[in-house]
Length: 336
Ligand code: QUE
Figure 1 (spheres, protein in one colour):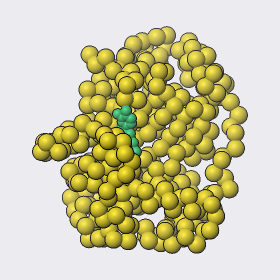
Figure 2 (cartoon, rainbow, N blue to C red; figure 1 turned 135 degrees about the horizontal axis):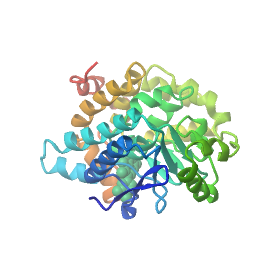
Figure 3 (cartoon, protein in one colour; figure 1 turned 60 degrees about the horizontal axis):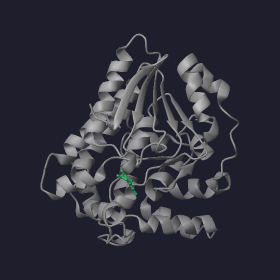
């Protein structure tokens, strides 16, 4: 068994613990396979009332093992992306289909693949240290793991805002945004976990704490106006008219990400509003098999995770220079 994932039964809980601390629990192919087998086995175990996923040493999970996908793609392995992403998305669907309560304790970074392990479950408990984000446009990829279904269903235009900019939802903001379902202080998480194991998921509602205000409440009008625009240039135009500090910071964030990735993410999230989860995952898989072999993805992972210079050489370098026909062509073999 894969040592980066621990699986055991405890009281009423079927427990799954992520344990690859040196990489912020980024999900390897072997981890995905182990988690999926555990979800199947615990779901079928009559003594297990609910599943409980946590990662106490590292908060939660930084994403997928995109470094190894990049290496596979650069080595000419035509199946690298298909094998990894089809395994990951099948797990996301299995979590959504799980007939028992599926509880995640998020006490730190929860990005990309980590969101795919949490948001499709029934109970997502965030502490003030929880940090939810879909930052894939920063590495020349796109929001996947079913978030092309999820993000369009968040309040207002928060999902398009998160998907294009990579904006983080910290602590209670994750609950306001619809990513998490309950909030507790980090110091109370061990007591909540102990009560959960002993008494089951009813304790979550009893021990959840009052929700602090949404830190983005004042920015919602700007977010909703700009990110509901019918095109990327129109989003930029509306932010430029915004003049607030928030609008200017959002523009800066948008311009740091891969311009091509911003465009293909916009198209994916627009279409995702009309898909169910299975259709969204199928569309993501088709797109991932294209995007993982583009220079943009290799360059983004290089700049953020390999060389860590955070100065990617995007091509084209500006949003207005992205060719709409090149973006459309990426969706040529996307189902529905
Ligand atoms: C976008 C991403 C990821 C990211 C950063 C982004 C991602 C991912 C990691 C990551 C972080 C720390 C690690 C690691 C991976 O960072 O998917 O192995 O130690 O896994 O901007 O999509």
